[in-house]
Structures are given as C-alpha cells and as structure tokens.
Image (cartoon, rainbow, N blue to C red; front, side, top):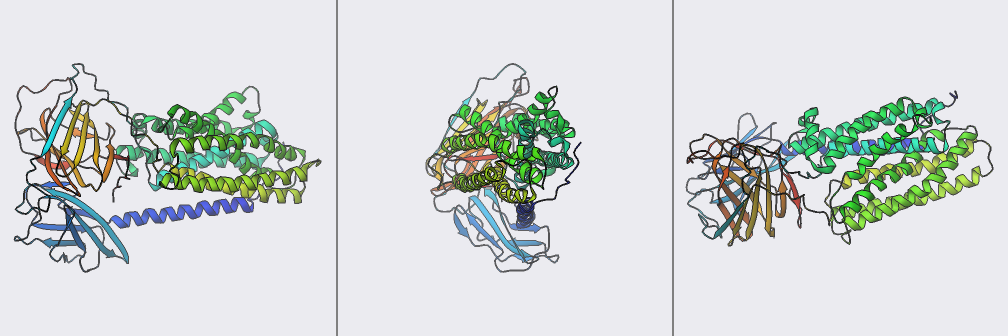
Length: 618
C-alpha cells in the first residue's frame, strides 16, 4: 500500500475555508441580529388578537432592559396614523405601558403597533397587530359593520367513511439561516464525495491506497452528514411551524413525507447520506467489481435528491429531469476538481497522479456541457425573461457570472495540464504546484457557486407554480366591494382535529395589511377561538400542512370572521358559518350557540405570493 504524502491544505483550499468561514460568521451575526431585532417577550393586546372594544392600555414587555426614548411606540390603524399617549417605562426598564385617553379610543378595524427601542446599544424593532370589532370611532373608508360583503360558500359533500387522510401539501422551502447553512454543507459534501468517487473509479484506481485520500473522503462525508442533518432538522421545524428545536425529533422528520417532493427528497437524502458511510469506510469498494455497483449507486442517489429540491414551475417533469442531471453533472465537475486540488496535486508523485489529472480532463468536459445545458433549461423554465426583476433572477445572474469565470479558469487549467503533462511519466513538484493553483482557484469558485445555489431555494422564481391544489372539504369566499378585498378560505378535512388551512388573497394586488382569519366555536362548547394572522400583503396564498394546521376541538357550527385593511378601506368580522364534523363524518344532534372562550390559537403558514412578495414574520 502506498502511504506517501499526508497532504497539506493548499492555498485554494484554505481560501475556500476562509470564504465559507466568513459566510458562516456573517450568517451567525445576522441570525443573532434577527433574534435581537425581535426582542419582544409579550404584548397586550397580543399579536393577532381580536378585541371586542378598544384597548384601555397597551403594554410591551421586552426580554432585556431597554433605554428610555422619545416616541418608542407608533400606531397605524386602517392605514392611518394614530397618535398614542406617551409611553411610561417600568422600574425594571423592560416594560413600556401606554394608558389610552378614554376620549380618544382607537378606531374600529385593524391596528398595527410598531416599536423602536434601544437595548445595549442595539436597536430593537418589530410590530404586532390586532383588530377592534366595536368602537365609537371609525377611520375614513371604514364602516361598522360592513354591509356590502358578499359571501358565497362551497362545501364538498361529506364523506361518510372514517378515512381522514389529508391531501398532499407542497411546503415552500424554508429560508432560515440554519436551513441555508445545512443545505450548503450537505450539497458541498455530497458533491465533493460523488465527484471524488467518480474520478477514482474512472481514472485513479490507486486513490484508495493513499492515506490522505481516505482521510479526505471521510472528512467530506462527515461534512455532508452534518449538513444534511442540520438541513432536515431546519426543514422539519419549518414544516411544523416551530423553532429549530422542534425539528430535532425523528418524528418531526417523518412529517416531511407530507411536505411534497422537496420534503421527501430531504428525508431520502439523510438516509442515503448515512448509507454512503459504507462507501467511505472502505473506498476501494468503488473499484472492486463485486461491490462497485452499490458503492457508486449510493452517492449517485444521494446527489440526485438535490435535483428534487424544486419541483414546481412550467414543464415540471422536464424540470425534475434537468434538475437531477444538473446536480449529478455539477457534482462530477466540482467534486472531482476539489479532489484534484486537495489530494492528487498535493505534491510530487508517480505516474498514477498524471493519469488522474488526464482522467479528470476527460470526464470534466461532458460534465461541464451537461451542467451548462441543464442550467439553461432551468433558467428559462423558472425565470424566463425576469432575470432583472426578481430576487431569484438576480441571483441566477450572479451565479451564471461565477460559472462563466469558473469555466474560463478551468479551460485555462486544462490547457496548462495538457502542456505540462503531455509526455510526463510522473508528476514533478513544480508541475504539481502550478496545477494546484489553477485547479484550486476553480474549486474555490465552485464552492461559491454552490453557496449561491443553496441561497436560490430561498427565493421564489418568477414562473414558479402556486402550491399544489387539492379539493378542500370547506371553501368560503369573502368579497368586500368597498375595500376591494377578495379572500378565499379553505379547510380540510373539515373534521375534529388538525385541519389544513389555505387562505388565498385574490384581490387587491397589493396594499393588504392586518389580515386575520378567526374561527369562533359553537356556543356553549367551551372551545377556544382560533385566531390566525395571515402574512400576505397582496395577491397570493398562505398554506399550512395538516400536521401544523388549526386544531378544531369540537364539532358543530363554527363562525369564520375576516379582518383586514386595504388602501380602499377595512373589513371587520366578514365571513359566515360552516360545519366541522366529527371524525366519523357526523354532526352533533343539535347546534349550540356561543361566545368565544379561551386564548387564541395560531398555526404556522407558508406564504406564496403570485404577484407581490408576501411579508415574512418580523
């Protein structure tokens, strides 16, 4: 066994680590700033509350001491500024309290309270919203109650069976920092691992004999494993609508099977990455005829799951094929060049190293062509001509530029390799140094491209489809003529237990604020009122999974209420009644009437905007 060359990180690899390290530090700082930017521990009224009468006091409690400042609280009701009395800071410097003037109550409709305070030299900014059902004051364009609301209801025929399966839901890929970091490390690790084993199988069968090569493959697998695990945890937490800790349980991972193909692909990637450890434990399996097929199949399938991260848009089947082809070709190109720069060219060596470089030149050519062609297919399929008018398109442009530079440097490196190794019987130290610099630069650019690719999934392409539609057991349409608000609210399965909620704003295109959907329980049941803020500011869809949906605890006649404000006016309490059935499809013998009791309950929604970006949670 050849044990020479333990390998020393080259300049290109150190640069790659520095770039990724800087990104991680920036990300960590950004995440900390996000947490600090919220700062809110409690508020009264609470976020999303529906108040019968205007509040007598408004209190905001922070998780840290704040400094006294001028006008720390600002209110906007129905798109009009509302002047609040001076806020008083508590003795522990953590609570701001505003005592409202009884002669100047807050008006009917939706209100937003924003705060801007300073804590430890940092500014904390955020907002919370609530709506008021009754008030002696109305804002311009607000009527109480609205009389021009046209409500239509379409209820699917009840299913008498006990089957309560819910329709498949496509959950938009989560966009948090841990998700991006996990996706990047997972993609980078799997790509380098796959490209490495392809190069070993195709042109460097002596690779597993090198200690440095074996250590490299195992290190890369650890990176891939850690990144994939973080990605799945963050994805599961987002699907549940919980914090990162909510996705740690394996039970939460299994819920990704209800999150469409991207969720299933993430779960499959985790399983395949674990199994790929069998390959890196003994890398010679990729060149042994008896084990080569499974040894190559495992990392191939793991990389193929990357191509399923986005399955929507025009020509979805073409997109899936192009996505998988793009992922595999990209992994061969970038993964093999990283192995070349990090291991093969770490120093002088025998003829097998020359064969490895020549073999890379042979396999990288087709990989580059497939990467570029499939990338163009995805570009035109998802973005079309909206490269400058959408966030997704602009990142695609930056990525395309990085790939072009990478391609130029790669072609130059191949020419140098062909010139230096045309008649070489072994790899000299000067040749190894020169080639390592060229291919190392290409590898660094490959890492940048993968970082951009990981970020792309946080943006919605211009031509992306809306979430998959399905038949809902309950659908109600609220069309308010005066405000121009047209909202469709859908529930499924319409039975006791967790229900998938989908809220679609059909109109207006923009200018919606304070959108809240409330569900009032049947009278006398003691069930809680469910209050769900909807983070849409214009036309689009907010969706939940059934697992993270709304908990309807009792059967009977529930009442839906819509509250929102548009540029034309406000809607308050619009809606109508609908039936929630028992698990067996039956209704209570008699309806009972009620007043809401208990604290509001909310579910986590995934927002998809079809014309204007939906707001994200502050």
